[in-house]
Amino acid sequence: MNTKLLRQNARKIVSRTILAADESTGTIKKRLATIGIESTPEINRQYRQLLFTAPGIEKNVSGVILYDETIRQSTDQKVPFSAHLEKRGIVPGIKVDKGTVQIPTLGQDKFTQGLDKLSDRLAEYKELGAKFAKWRAVYTIDKISPSDTIIERNAHDLAVYALLCQQADIVPIVEPEVLMEGNHPFDKDMVISEKVFTKVFELLKEYGVDFGGMILKPNMITSGKKNAKQADVKKVAEISLKVLKKTVPTAVPGIAFLSGGQSPDLATIHLNEINKMRNKNKSSYPWRITASYGRALQGEALEAWGGKKANVQKAQEIFIARAEKVYKASQGKL
Ligand code: 5MM
Image (cartoon, rainbow, N blue to C red; front, side, top):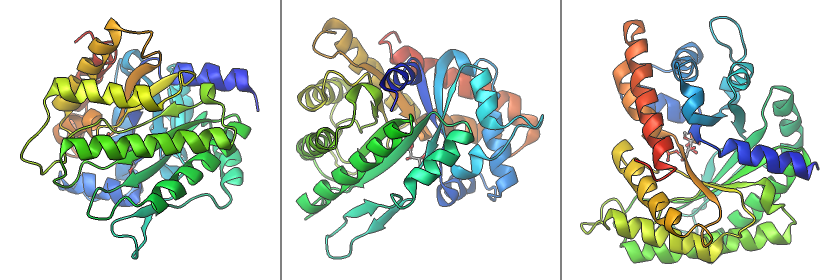
């Protein structure tokens, strides 16, 4: 394990923003269905190419998370996507989890699959150009969920994944996502997220993961999407920072929030407010705080594209305009 390289790459990945373009087959199908397009490997490739070749992407994006299908695909000029991104100074990464499985006896609890043969898969992805990886654990807030059992289980799996990545000199993005779905109040999200993040770092430490060579990808603390009382932007920023300060070791170089279904504008405004607060007290919040958005970075561009060649340029401009805003928000400069 090359600790120096891992730490250097981790800092590079969070230096601007991270584009999450790792939608699995089912998710990209859903996303494309919203614009009336049927997903095929070739359509998926054309859509991802639109994003990755957008003029100026490298000024705002420092990392891109790819999916297994995507890391094996190339641009029209036959340059593999990972090499294309590298050439532009963007670090290519790969989703290595294999999705979630519901545990019927534990309410809405799910665990994430993908540890089997992970070391072999990491070695192959490294050959294909990946320098970092991502693993997502999800937690639904419901009557009995998330249970202590699933919080413990997911933390073990995230830690084993992170350690295997580091042993392969691949920077792990550790993503515990407390879902916004549901009508739970803000305070419940705060309590659960703190509990989840605390357990994740407890296990990362127990397994001996190097905090300097990893990135955390958490949810922001918000009210449940269906709760009538939505917390305001300042509260989301203040409490998200408070929970992170309580749970994230100072050695972690970067935190990259997911957008979790927030609108592009709201996800951007929240990130900006968080960084404005952080800028006033950097010694308390030593990590770089940026975004690793999927929907909030892509949503507007996807809609503008609509699956038509004639719209590619317009969609790229829209994508870059959003990426620029998110990068500015990651500096609290919007
Ligand atoms: C891009 O979506 C990622 C993959 O999701 P599936 O495994 O369900 O296909 C997802 O993990 C994503 O990276 C994060 O949830 C962040 O994306 P959002 O849209 O929440 O910012």
